[in-house]
Length: 421
Image 1 (cartoon, helix red, strand yellow):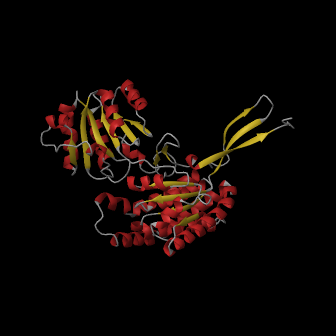
Image 2: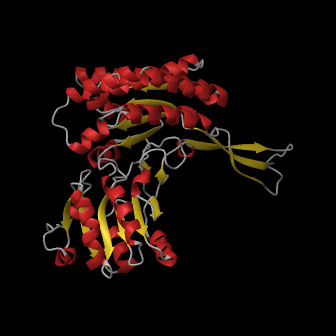
Image 3: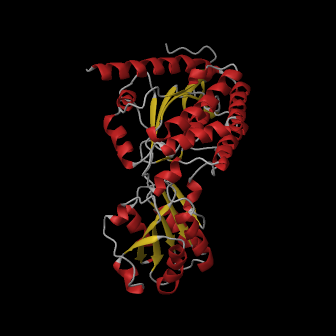
């Protein structure tokens, strides 16, 4: 191991052990102390808003040439800073997830068994570009009673530091250990590798970022991983869709914020209504600056559309670019999604309840929406105060990761003197 790797391993060991030491008091802290820390942190974010925005401006100035999608994710505005503070207040308002009785039963031998929610311990959060994840992840882990070690992207390092300082100040003011929220002490990429190998020091890794980051984490981790889904989302316009509703939903789903994982990347439209409705849908988007990649059936209706390749339909554009395909009914839409989707979020627009049920029951995605924009999967719209990604996969939690998903459980057993003899 070279000196640089030795130094990085030492930095990781020091930070993780400090987090482990802080995790115990935080796990035992009651709701009043945790909520006080969150409210103090929210107040600090508001009080330090100008400094956070200045740090963000310095980050953006140091990273020229960003794509429009990347720039959108990395940029903070006064409204986004206030949204972070509001998110912390909302998390403070939520019930404490720790100590909940998840289920209970009594055995024939008289033992009463309870499954009780408890903190995970130390969470390692690896994310890219979006500095607000610092607040979301730090606040959710704090309320869930777990310490967190945050490693953000170098392009938002100054912003993340300014936000993390507010969280640590909130912990300190509430009498809780500030090392319960830590930012990686270095931007060296080797630090990520050290986190992934830190079995025994870090209990869970959560990656939030692009496909390359998630794949690296899954390939290298020696610590359990809660994987974040790539956001290849679909909006399906069924033949029974209200045309004006479909136009509103698609415009929002694609262009509200193109750089978030809940942005729709592919429009699927029923062949029965495509000749009349497709020009209206794409005309709205084109007027707003959207570009397209279309299959042969869509191009037969609108010959000016550029042709799509098979690879296009499996691409998360994160930009003002939309894939377009004409399909035959719900079965055709589901077949397309199974072939190209990432199991993140899908929407059906229809006035037919049976068709909606068939679609929602047929997808294998973390989130299914009926007559609502896929962009509701960005931010705290599920009532969690915030979320730190959409988890997917059959072996772990699915859907937006909020407070409940950041807890594990233990068993509490009450007897009346029973013995096994």
